[in-house]
Image (cartoon, rainbow, N blue to C red; front, side, top):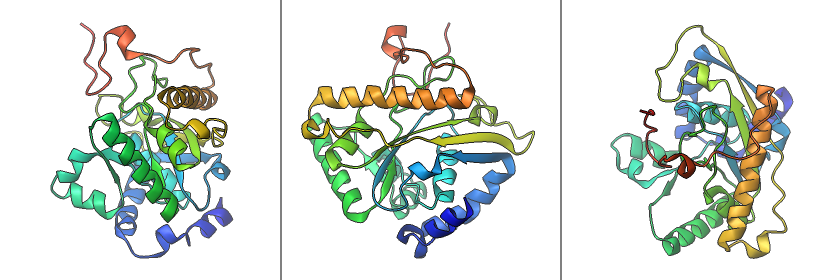
Length: 258
C-alpha cells in the first residue's frame, strides 16, 4: 500500500490545507487505539475523479471506520447527510467545512433536481461521496445488508459516476448495533473490502426511470452482501431483509421486539 498511498497523498483533495487535515490528524490516531483496519481491494477506489462509495451499515461507528479507511486510501471522505444536521451548532459548520453533502426530505421532483445538482458538482470537481444505500442501520438480525434505497444508484446513474460497493466487518465488536462502545481489548480487527465498480453501463441511457434505479440498487445490495460474505466466511442470505415484511420502520432507531 505504501507507494500507492504516497501517490494519493498528493491528491488535490488533501494537498491543500483544509479542515480535513485537522480532523484527520485527530481522528485517525485516536481511532487507531481501538481498532486495526485492514484494507482490501484498494485498487478499486480510483486515485482521482468522482465516485459514489456504497458501504454496508450495521453499527453507529461505521462512518468513522469508513472515513478513516477512505482517508488512508488518499481520498477525502465526504458523506451525504441529513440537511437538519447542517443546522446543528459546531457540527453544521464542521460538515460544511469538510464538503459534506446535505440531503433534504423533499418531493420527488425536488429530490431529482438535488441529485442532478450533486452529480454535476461531483463530476466537475472530481470528488467522491459516501452514500449508505440502506439509509440507516440494517434491520437484519444477523447484520446482513437489507433492502436498499435508490439514492446511491440514482446519483451514480445520473452523473455517470462509478458506483463502488464496499463491505466492512468487525465494527460490531467495537460498537454493537444500538449498544455501548466496548473499549477493551484494544486494536480490535476490522476488515474493509472495496469491490470493483458495478457495471451499470446498460442502465445509464434510462437513468431517470424509477424501475431502473430500483434494479441497480438491488444489484448493488446483492454485491455488497457478496463482499460481506467473503469477509465473514459464510454465505449471504439469498434475499435481502425487507423491514416492511417484518412490521419494521425503515428509518429511526430499531425498537426491540416485545
